[in-house]
Image (cartoon, rainbow, N blue to C red; front, side):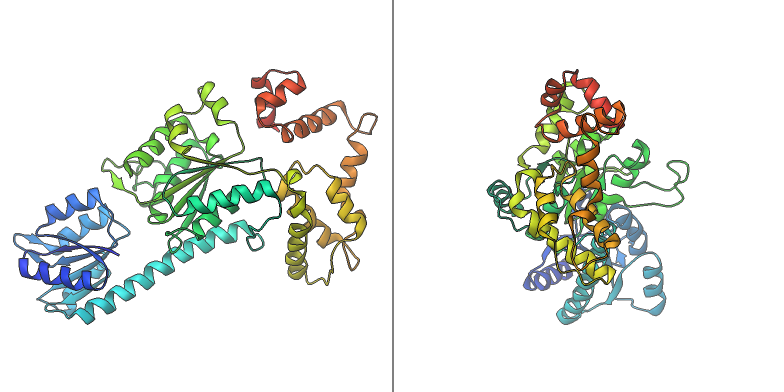
Amino acid sequence: MRTLVVDDEKNIRRTMAMALESMDHDAVCVASGAEAFKELKNSVFDIVFLDLKLHQESGLDVLEEILRLAPRAAVVIVTAFASIETAVEAMRRGAFDYLPKPCTPDQVRQLIGRIERTKRLENRVVELESQLRAESPEVDLTTEAPAMQAVIDMAFKAANSDATVLILGESGTGKSVLARGMHARSPRKGRAFITVSCPSLSRELLESELFGHVKGSFTGALADTQGKVAAADGGTLLLDEIGDLPLEIQSKLLRLLQEREYERVGEVHPRRANVRVISATNGDLPQAVREGRFREDLYYRLNVITLRLPPLRERLQDLERIAKRHLDFFAHRAGKPLSGFSAEALETMRSYNWPGNLRELRNLIERAVILGGGNEIGAEDFAEINQLGSEFRVGGRVTLEELENEHMRRVIANSRTIDEAAAILGVDPATLYRRKKRL
């Protein structure tokens, strides 16, 4: 833990620092509120030990500014004038707890233990909320496909560093799953893993969700919010579909990556952030840079380590195992004793192109489990695959628009870039990009 000791007595600062360092915590010591504010603007601290009586300053007044600069820090009031009144007032203003002077190393150790447990629980709650929204079976990153294994090996090597990582791949290939796996194998695994979906909100709401806002900064801002960057402090922040990040926010993200600083909406004071950023996209960022939709300097800052996930059709060695894992998960949830897949069902899955990749596989198996009536999943339970095979062909009972849209989807799914797909289809890349976005 990183700790900041604010006390005007030199001997107490030295004694507290020795006690904290003997417990393997980092300690920075200052003698005044002004020095504390300077440290908090330049560094991130987990705990602040604050003397209640500083020369000409009230520790309670300094407390409010500390909490404004470091809302996630646990502030402990240390006072020789211990009383129920001062303790209640300090905690009413936001202090985590208080210690009487003189305090013993054992008292400090016990208090730090409670702070550590509280912070772990807070981070765990945030992470569980993120996992519940995903509502997916247990993450499995084992593979028998050489191309996928090469990506996983590189990802796990990169996990031990704080380098920014850019994960590329078609929609549904498991980019967020890989990012979570990297976090779980990193030194930050005990802290939060937070996901921000860049296309999900308007520019104003996305900026607020990412960086937080202060009360009254815009209509509907009824209270201060810390934002996802602050929630991920010490952990990992995944920016999903980074290619859809508005240009106005791209400059603020670049500042966060380069200087580890950001500002909440409606706030002029910069805040420090200790986050590891992983970004993911199914788009063509170099093309977006050429078209002026994505900052070139941000692209190079994100593209320190690039991982390109292969689509499901290029890792069919894993298809049956992944399908069985989904089957077991959904069968258990539905209370159905399904044993597996028929030979025909397996052949149907192997011969399908899977334009939606792992996400499409998951959805089709969930549907088959819910609607199927036998002891195993048969080819007849994959109605959507069978329908696509019979209807979406020349002469099938579909409109020209439906046939054209499906053909376009499959060409894009089988192409490395939008430019390549546009060349195959014989259309302008910008036209194809607009059609893709509309669909």
